Amino acid sequence: MNTTQRSSRPINVDGKNKTKHRKVPRNVSSGESFSGNFSIFSHPGRAQGAGKTRYLDDREYIAANNYVLFNCPEVAPYIEIFTSRLQEQNPDINGAKIDKCLERDFSMWFILYAQNASLIPNEIVRDLASGPLRSVRSVPIYYVNGYKFHTQKYGANK
Image 1 (tube, rainbow, N blue to C red):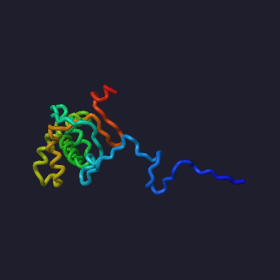
Image 2: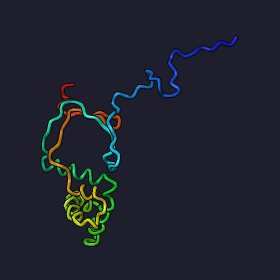
Image 3: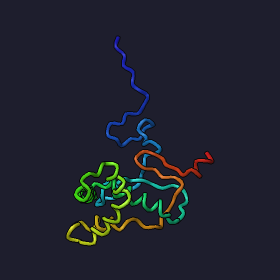
Image 4: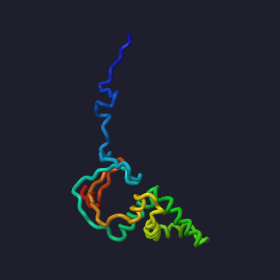
């Protein structure tokens, strides 16, 4: 005798039926993606909680600016130009000194370099050279790439 038992779980063949086992994980962002921007800005995310406007201090401003510039593939060719010029001027310079010069001097060099529009044809790259705004909106919780980030102040109460 051949008996077949059916699963008590709903079958989700076409993806239209929501089931307990197909729910989106709770930390996945339902934020919108921004097409047309550089890859560094294209990760959809969503903020949670009341936001507060504040201003970046000098250390935060430099860190934010360097993070964007060094992690934006569209800026990489200009980092190469800067590095090549450093090596031409200082043939004996080592990698550690190059890194230090990049962190300390690249953003100012990039501002000056970007003033000549013929050297950087992409307007968005030229805009990046001017750096971020000092005014930022800080939120206690932010979801991006399946991760949940929260401020230390918010997390201290948990």
